[in-house]
Image (cartoon, rainbow, N blue to C red; front, side):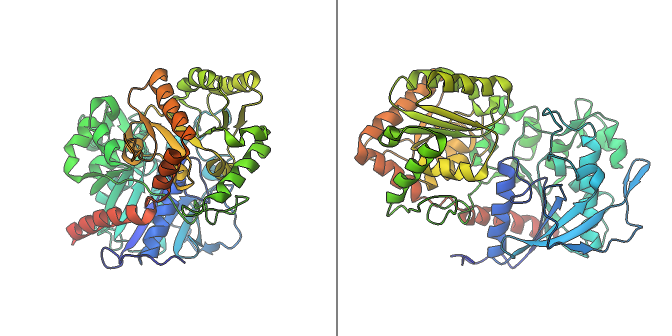
Length: 499
């Protein structure tokens, strides 16, 4: 167990995290890593942490304790009552607790969010209404008295509403403070107005201007923002951006109204999982002080991806992520067609829209000795790509925080990023001898992206400059210990306000 270098920011608190995903039980995107990293850091700082998560099909049942739930304990969705099961386990190396809400009809499915073909499940409103209500009941069943309930994204946005209404005078839950974190404002959980009848929340909350109402629909993200004691998002720049119409997705006015209670807390990375000095997925380990092993990792990656060894001494570019418009995927084909005219290599890992997957297949056909793409996701390969690549590409149209640019810097791989959200907060390009930690472009277009990438390739040819950039990136404190301090400040404030 890692010993933290700072004391808890407040006396030990009982913190409950409620989320739709968390590594290693269910991970679809960065949210899963965030929940795991933050929870571990809080537990290591001496706080009592419990996660509430659906019991998905892929969660191993071995070692989980079945919690006795009275048969009378039901979740009511309109006229329909749903029983549920609970299982309890340990998490974060035994430091934290996890409670799994068991309901096979809603969660025994092949994926967390989407049916086959990538479409949402037809009963998504009912699924997530059930989970939110069951999460609250799980805390009651187990007799928990949390000081802070930390909620994540729209799948948890109604919980503050129930705590303010049905549970306001509950002996165990009535005193709990709530913190709601926006991980991506674009995914708001907007449903037809009649959905609110299933929630049993006050009908007046769906009146124009009410905490749930959004252009006549029921918006769970808005509910979380309006009804929680404090609101956070995943980077300071994204907090500023979302208060403006261009990035506010219609909720910028709601966020401006909460600006005094709305904070941007930059995500961290779990350096017990993402650490080139100990990563079990790598063929060799290395540190900022001794980077010899990175070359061995590059050689192994080239072999694994079927690229020629001659690229060992040439720049190797990489991308890992969803192939969707948010990630700037429309910029890849025109820029890479130009850059691959030179003697460089590139490896991609991800899946998403067919047109972007097809574009990667086209690049493989055009540059068979330089370009490889794996469609899908492979966590172990993602670690090996971060270690083996030289340059990481993140031309995201918008990026609330981003984790891969931080993984890259920790692994000595230099990021090229669009100056948005958390990318702007974590990657610095500076002139002169202090060249910063990466390369940044400011206009979202192919030409600006290409020029930033060419600046990176030019720096690669000057080994002294390149090593300064790599060294600066690797020596940063990107850990969740830093970020947890900020969350502890938020917890302290909202918990004190409840006294």
